[in-house]
Length: 77
Image (cartoon, rainbow, N blue to C red; front, top):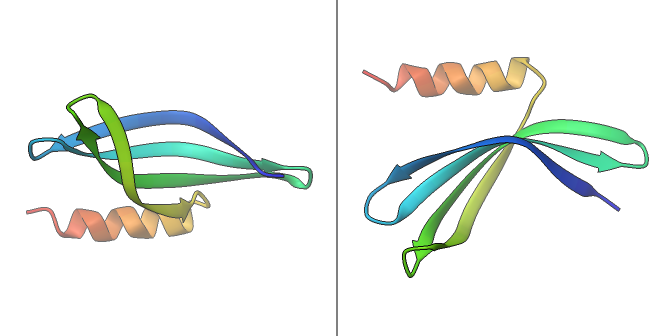
């Protein structure tokens, strides 16, 4: 069985009721732990209830994460 543990999370709000949740998490199994970054898109239903719609997980292996950050940074003007 896999247990997901959230180590740290931050939220970026945009639009009227949308957000991205960016979190450092780890998947814990009997075989060990695997850290990853989760980026989840969601919205606030009725202004307060968080509803999650889409997610992506990025391995927290340094090389992959840095490549994604560099690409995202290249889009910022």
